Length: 123
Image (cartoon, rainbow, N blue to C red):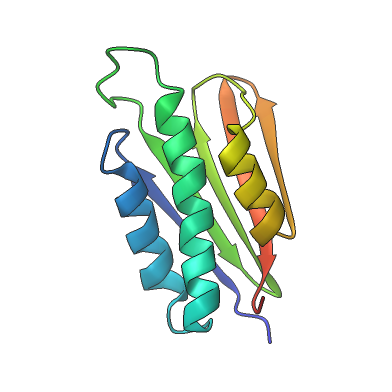
């Protein structure tokens, strides 16, 4: 099964960003994947977004925000893009990504950092 889904959302940077990202993933993928797998996907995106929020400079009020790029074809690829530094997620987030994602990484192009993960449509 190939879903052929691609959606892009702008999310404000701040304390509510992880919730916003989880809500988007739930809304877009909830009808296509099982509930346990959906919870894993929501945890993965929450970890990435929480880590990116923590990378915002002190005093940043979220003006730049994030772009959430979600693709679902034969598998799922979820990316968060922002103008923050190219940092590897903290140890706990990295362990969660290693455990639940098929692949993940951090790339930097121009002034944009992209943190992404890939997972199957089923665990």
